[in-house]
Length: 268
Image (cartoon, rainbow, N blue to C red):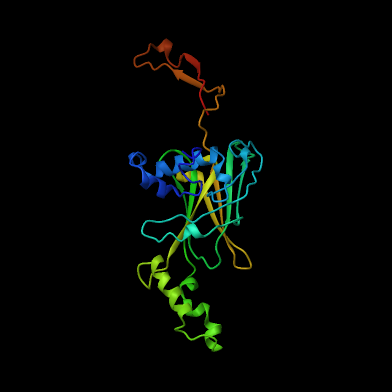
C-alpha cells in the first residue's frame, strides 16, 4: 500500500490503523510495529515526512557504528488536535549506533537523546507485543514554562509594549486548551523512534541512564540488546556424569560406582 501510494509516507500509524477494519483485527501495538518495519524496508523512512530516516545498511551492521539522518514527528494522541501535521522536525539531537559487545560478542544498540530544554521527566519504552521490536517511544511532560504564556512575554508586558490581555496572549491561551483538559494539567508529548535493528523487549535487556550536562541539557542514554531471529548454533560440550545408586549393595560393591559420560550438544 505504501508503494501504491495508498498510504502517505508521512501518515501516522494510529491514523492509518483507524481507517480500516482489516487493520483493527490486530492490536495497535502489533500494527504499529509492522507499519514501521514495512515503511523502513520499503525505503520510505527516508522520505522528508517520515518518522525516521536511516541508511540502507541499517538492517545488518555487525560491530559497525550506524549513522543516520533523523526525521522525528511527535505523533497524534487520541483526543489531541492534530497540530503535528504542521510541524517538521529535522536533524533532531538523537543518535543511534549498533555495536558488538566486546565481552559477550552480542549485537547491541545504543540510543542517545537530548531532551527538549526544560523537560524534567521522560519515560522510555519499547512498543510491541512480541519478544522483539523495532519501535521505541519517549514520553515526556512539556516544560512548565511552556504553558505560562504571560511569563513568556513578561518583558514585553513590563515594557508596556503589549498588555497582559493582548490578543496575542489570549490566542495562545485559547489554543493551549486543545493540548490539555484543565488549566492545572501540564501537556505531555512523545516521539517514536524506528530502530535500525530489532531489539529484545525483556526488561532485563534494557539499560536506561539519565545524564545532565553543565549547561543543564538532559540526556537519555539507552542500551538495548539485539534480538536474534535465528539461533546461532554452535557445538558445545557439557559433560554430565551419572552415578549408579545402590540401595542394598553387597559389601564388595560398596563405593564402586560406574561413571557414564554423556556429551550434550546445545544452543547458546
